[in-house]
Image 1 (cartoon, rainbow, N blue to C red):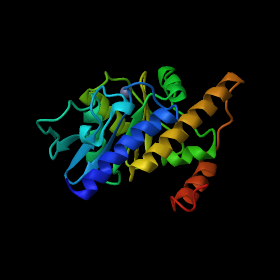
Image 2: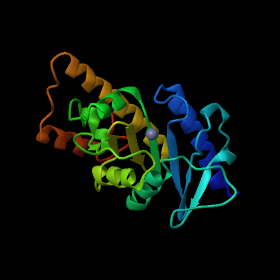
Image 3: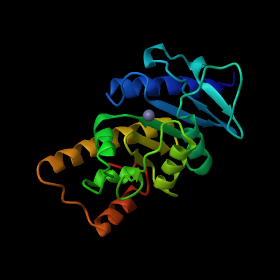
Image 4: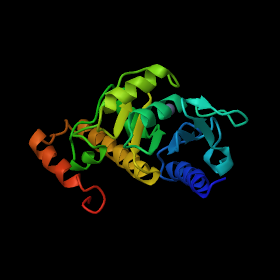
Length: 217
Ligand SMILES: [Zn+2]
């Protein structure tokens, strides 16, 4: 196995354990993927994070073909595949059912610009992709459409959240921030509603986030 592939596989194990440790996921519901050459690596279906090993990651080859002789891929592998196919700027996808993001997704609410840190999503809010049954092509399409050309995150109606980023570590951090933003918005709704930032105010934030990395608070 190439060194790069070995590194990606163990980073995926760390990411799944990280989601669990940060309380962003419970049980076997979350999944992550990374781009690898013309294909992707995605987490297997139904393996709890503590039992995941680097060898368990499932390779999906060019054209979205699941290579033989591996564990069954995550039921959401089509969504991971489609996001990495349509967004060349992305190298990794994180999907989880973090509590507050899921509460909003179940209430049919997108996250507006309640706090400037929503800018980590690459837009002035986190859109809500319409409901489609888990694991379906329709869900993959809905999420790709909701993120558009530059968005990095979406809520999935009656389901959870999904994030893309150039690298897996970044995707994990954004997923954690989206959960925080969802909790803040949920809390603001509970005390009478949020006072959102204007388009101009968010344009200024996004410009400052432009340098992504060192410029980011
Ligand atoms: Zn899910």
